[in-house]
Length: 180
Image (cartoon, rainbow, N blue to C red):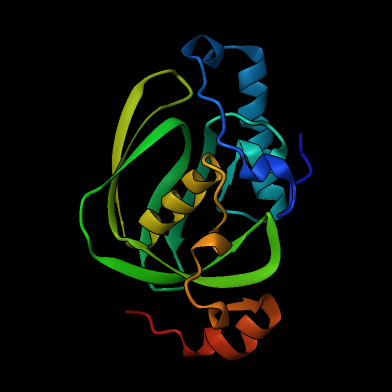
């Protein structure tokens, strides 16, 4: 089922989400939550979505990112469910990308984040999983995990001049992006 997206200003987006009890994972309710996240993400054109964005204050997010991105990076992360994720930064190297968000429609902001991370989490089968992410994928994962801790990407934009409307991004910024 497609759920409405909670937008910036909704207090649920500023709360630290609750840990998921492993007993909740293999239930009809939880399966429906995952299906709703998938349906909502696809319907709204996202590459990731977190449960708080659809009004559920639980530490669950999903990401699906496959193919070439706008920065010329080939990424292969099939639909992945992150439950109670924990992140570890593996390198101090940071890079910035122009981020957007379903909960902050119509805006893009330049955010610098660590470019090599490890995320440990439970999947939808209640299995412990760990993945390493580099580059743009590392940014996407951190963006989605931020939602579970009450943070939006706009909180991480260091220079207010690097927060722009989507239309101006497409006209003035996107044509200048390098594919390195």
